[in-house]
Image (cartoon, rainbow, N blue to C red; front, side, top):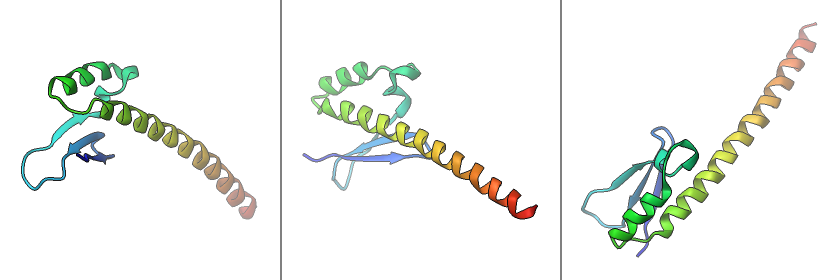
Length: 95
């Protein structure tokens, strides 16, 4: 069965949902997956196994979150340098 992984950046959560019309969705805070922030991905894996669900979803979420966080750091670095260059160009133009 295919699961959909929805990422809510504003609320910092992941939503697992099956492609069905009814039922509720399980929402977990992304901080639970981040071991450096006090979360425990192993507990989530155990919980998934107890519910007879796919435990590889936890690993996929951790990997995607790691890539997401690296992308955010890179984005801030690039746009920080870009902002400095723009400000330098504006100051040169004004003088």
